Length: 114
Length: 116
View 1: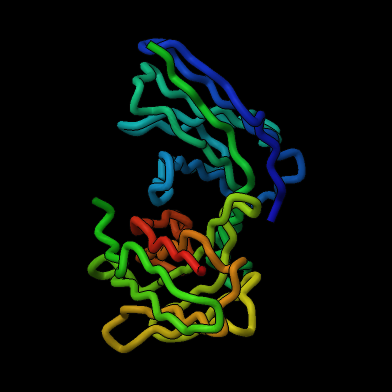
View 2: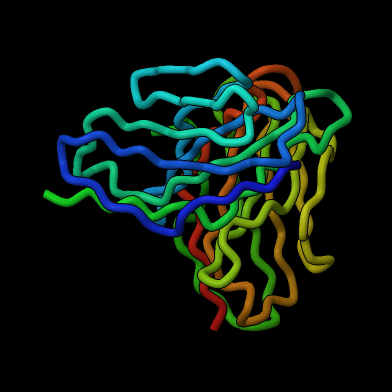
């Protein structure tokens, strides 16, 4: 699986958009980008995933660059409850791949302040 | 609530002992994954089962073993425990093994293991 690079920490004012970057320059054509977050000592929570098109759901938006070498997770209106570690992961979906192995790096600690 | 149930929530034991952690996946999910999280190592993938069969192994020690039963619940057995095994152990489940969205995992709230 491709490796990802994320800034170790970011902060954001409550109510503002939080834009979390992720670099995955070695991503291959069949690897999806997944985002998870972990609020202190709780189990990680799935946020969103995509292949090459931008995606949006009730939690966030995922913007993937055209060359797919980087992506940005956008929390449009951050709240205090969004304070968490955010993980960007790339994963092959095809049979015979490293199935199930979601590799969590160190992620980005997002702190939302009032 | 993710729908994944892990028991117990906390476990305190002594070095050399053996413990069993239990996980019940979400209804309908066939894949179960185990992760270990310690302060210095982050989230480490241990092992995955799909419909009772082992599918992938990560950095799981030989002292650790797991299985998935016919009713799809899973157990992680940790033996000859050492101080360094103290960690949060998470179980996760997913509905599919392959295909789009198969990486969408639902995590339990974890078992905090303390080895004294």
